[in-house]
Length: 429
Image 1 (spheres, rainbow, N blue to C red):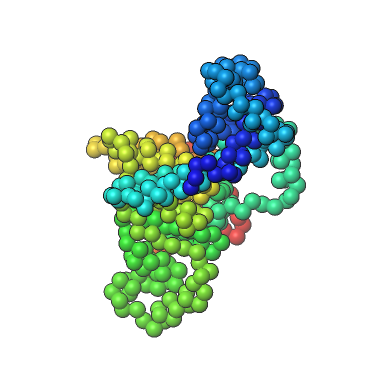
Image 2 (tube, rainbow, N blue to C red):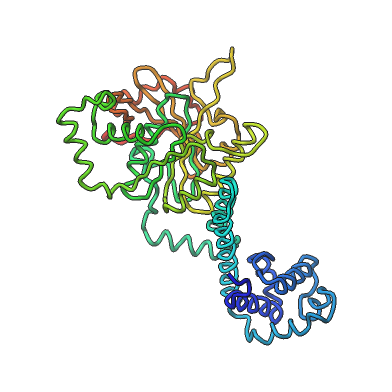
């Protein structure tokens, strides 16, 4: 692409001209734009001069900018810019066009680097750069109290409950208000049932949203074996031994009636880093993604703590920038030898990084107990109460279902939840 594309130059001229003829907008302009957004060197130099004046709290006008540039050589150029900008009224639209065209140019430059890449690492770096541009956040927008209050009344008056992410378990749907862009952790010790619970969640969400299940240690074939056992209620042993009966084939066949109604992909993500996940999620336009599990993602860092910290920060940033809801499975740290094992794992037990605890909008921990009972605890919930729910593990079909009735209220670990709010029970329970 010609770096002097007329669309970019028109936008660059309009933005700088607006600032020079209406200096009162300089502060807002500095918040919205960066020097790198100006692809032409002359325009970039003028913007840099304006930014220096602004940072020094000095007046910004044609005279001060010319002086900052160091001579009269720029005088015809500044005059040309100002004459080409009749009004500053539409400067925000000009700034949006400028930022968009600059990002598009950088994405195209990354595409050229991908084509010319010599090694896979070179190509991966270029893909990551392009992905960063695709999901780059808009500059922060300040919302006044008056505007915030007005928006609050408007949303409440509409009377429509936001379309929160559905979990398929009533207690979670009533208490865990997950929204686009949230970062949620599902933790547990090995074999507690994290993956099977995550596949249940993914299946339920996939009826209304596009879902990607990134498996970093289990093959897609094994994930689908478990998923079909859950959904079609086929004995898992018969699936694994390839001894399905006629009724099993009939049950599985019903899933084929309308497979496009379930928007669920399972991705073999072994060796992925966060950039790979982000690129794939954006390309497939997923609304929700599951990561099984977070400690297996590749990352930079001198220690495992640094690596997992970087993973957590990157996932949190990705969720906020893209609006994709991320449900990341996490292993828990084993208790030290000689230490009494806590009956109820806490969010501080998330393996190898306290950053996960800090970044997550919500944290659920699944704990195994005797007699095929599991306890799912919400130990962090920014938008609601914490609590715990008893689940029964159906080993034949690899499902976890809420326990109702008196059995659910016999909480032998009640002493481990002294500060947690119990979910109210409906009469039908």
